[in-house]
Length: 437
Image (cartoon, rainbow, N blue to C red; front, side, top):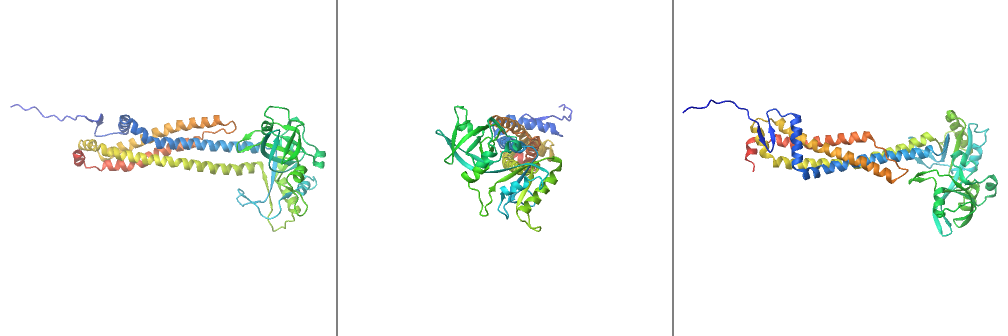
């Protein structure tokens, strides 16, 4: 009987459409992972859902946070040119949070002292504000808005002028006249038919006022509509609407705008304001100020820090979904290891090493996370554009740092949560695996 010569044939072995070789490289593992995902489309989609939602939420919320920061910055920059803001109370040493401390606030006497060119030569116009929220009615229409008492220099300092009618004058302030200049939002609510408001009467806290001017549209956001206000002479606000006289006879104001004559001499102007107000408030040399002076840049920076913290907080909350997605990946990979026990045993029997098995399942987990991250990225960008179309003032800005971070985190999550299932698969005994039913 003739025997055929024995030849060492190295045959490729295929199981479930997967080619097993002695040296499985990353690209082969990538191909195997894609094949596994395609073979179980619904399960793969459900597994990626946590990553998709997490990445989309991070990108959308961070983008909205950046948009809020832009709105805040634009509003403060639109307050006027070369302004300093004087508030009652102090700031903590970190100059981020205000707290009331000492003193009785700001008064019209402070305004008069700061307006004196001999005491504060670096300042131009000095404008106070004093007001409260009030109910305003007219012919069956009503709205609740901010009533602000101020002086005749308000339009120039705030760069906020009437488009119809006139602003009140010094005679109106001296007489405590019941005249009002209304903003565009108030006009739309009280005059829905578009009638000319000049000369018409309105009631503020049941006190009759005559409209003498309509302000230009300033704009703003849902957080602070700058057109939702009514301006009245400060003397009228302090005596007829919201009594402001202190026990010492001085009239309170909420805060003060001080216009700089020369922006380059801002520090000198701040020093002059501090000297004048400390003298006005009888503050001893070893006592702290009972007021705060801020420039526009400092004010924008302070609010930017607040919005940054808010943005980070929203990002962290959204990032929890990524953690949940990672747990989902680990869960499905453990199920996959159990389902493919015989395949793992077969691969080991023909020479696959532990690291080959481990890489196969690691790459599969990372592919799940990366595909989920890319889909989440697309949904997040679409969500950002939807939010931008819903609000004319709030324009979210896609933060590409957040995009890169979210995709990187999703890949890291795939790697981290794939390690245990991959290690478990790599440690299977080939004989026991082949016997597994």
